[in-house]
Every structure is written in structure tokens, then in C-alpha cells.
Length: 114
Image (tube, rainbow, N blue to C red; front, top):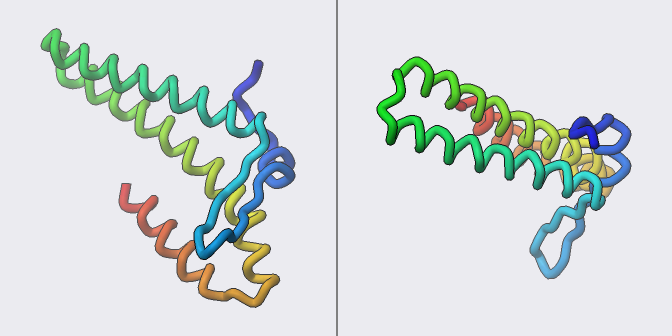
């Protein structure tokens, strides 16, 4: 099973709903499975980094593993952001809710600080 999702899969299977002033996102089972798989792998990478530190592994090697883990987290964020922008944000703009643009800009700024 490939962990890669096409742009169409992200667009077609993400949606956001507003329930009692709480916003929720709903993703297809395929996207959820993909994200969970990625996060499980990241969790394993974190445990591996901890083990490297416990074993006094050479710092440069640990830093490379940290970089790989950060990259994997960024991939998860990109998938979520793409689905959010193509579904939730578009939907809210179509409803006349332009405040969503400020929300997205703040989110992007937070991601870019990393």
C-alpha cells in the first residue's frame, strides 16, 4: 500500500463542518489511514532518537534523524493544509466568511517558523 495521496484524493475526501460553534474536519478512511501510518512512523522515529541519545550516539547522527523526523511531520502538515485549503477554506469563503483567510495566514506563519 502506497502512502502517497493524490491531490484529487485530498480534495475529494476532506471536508469541514460547523457543529455548535465547534469546527470539525472529516477525512476519508484512506486519508485517515495514511495520516495515522505516517504518525506511527514518526512516533517510532522519536523513540529511535531517544534511544540514540541514551546510547550516546554521535551528535551529528542524532541531528540527521531529528531532521528526517521534522521532514516527516512537515509532510503530514502539508497534507492537512492542502485538504483544509481546498475544502474548508473554499467552503467558508463561498459562505462569505472571509475571516478564514486570517486564520490560514496565522497557520502558515506558524508552520513557517519551524
